[in-house]
Every structure is written in structure tokens, then in C-alpha cells.
Length: 199
Ligand SMILES: Nc1nc2c(c(=O)[nH]1)N[C@H]1C(S)=C(S)[C@@H](COP(=O)(O)O)O[C@H]1N2
Ligand SMILES: [Mo]
View (tube, rainbow, N blue to C red):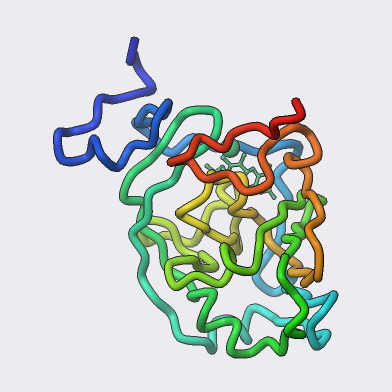
């Protein structure tokens, strides 16, 4: 049944919907806990762990090259949304400003509100990943992670931290919030990496 909240993919969209996913009509909000309220002037992004310690401000981020992105979004709770339009800073452009120790092979994303999620360096530093501050031409709404979130289109969306405020570089894998609670370490939607095999 599709009903009010889901729609059938068009013929040309079918191969973009991963197995077990349905297309959402709107853009659902998926948050564990409260939505933090953070203004751009209060926002910061702290670099820690195996990298030169630094804290980026909103102005620092805005001074970096700004790009437009169109990306598909896949939540592990089985809804996907195609062609979401964002504006922000490419991870690869941002990382030109960060001095990472070559031993760093994993990254922990930290957020206002305490959420965490882990990602390998290879999955993090990809050409199509970005820090988003604009959604469909409007400032990113608080419930979708404003003022700033990460977007990692090739993994389930729990890897795309909202209200991002820290990147911790690690020489080993640590598990974030959902990963400690049964979600998969990596979360590739095309391989249906939904849950950790030990659960
Ligand atoms: N800080 C934070 N980031 C988060 C979450 C969260 O609860 N807190 N939920 C994740 C999950 S499970 C999904 S599906 C997406 C949802 O993004 P949306 O609410 O913009 O649709 O954000 C991810 N990032
Ligand atoms: Mo999700």
C-alpha cells in the first residue's frame, strides 16, 4: 500500500531506489531526541583527534567555495527521497583546510545535542559529500539539521549528521549512537547494510 505518504517511482527513477525502499512524498524528519536550536553565530565545527586542533566558525565556512548539490536520500526506516537540492561546501574543499595525521582512517561525527555517527575516512572524503546549509533554496530548517549538517549520499542517512559540530579523526573504528544500538557500521543502502549482524 502506498497511501498518503509514499509514491511510486517513475520508470526512469526505478533504478535509483535501493532494495526495500519506498519513495516519500514529502521530506520526513527523522531525529532521535530534541531538535537543538543553534544560530549561525553560535555554530562552530571543532576538529579533534588525529588532526591539527582547530575550530571553524560560520564565517570560515562561508569563505570556502560554495557549491550546489542534487542528491538522493535514503533512510534506513525504508523511505527515500530523490533529487534533494542543497547548497554548501564540498567535503573535499573543506578538507584542504584541515591537517590530518596520515594514521587517521576513521572519523566520528559529533553534533549539538550529543548525536554521534562513525564513518571511514574513505567514505567521508568523497567528491560527492558535502556540508549543507541550504535546502531547496532556503536556509536549512532546524529540524533538517540547520544551520549545518553533513550529507553523505551513498550511505543511509543516519550517517549524515544534523547540527554537526565536531569531526574527530581516529586510527581505529569507534561506533556512533545508532551503530552502538544495532545499526550497521557502514550502511550501504544498495547492499541493505541496515543492521549489525550481531543483532
Ligand atoms: N544529530 C542528528 N543527526 C541525525 C539524526 C539525529 O537524530 N540526530 N538522525 C539521522 C537519521 S536516522 C536520518 S534518516 C537523517 C534524517 O534527516 P532529516 O530529518 O533531514 O530527514 O538524519 C540523520 N542525522
Ligand atoms: Mo534514518
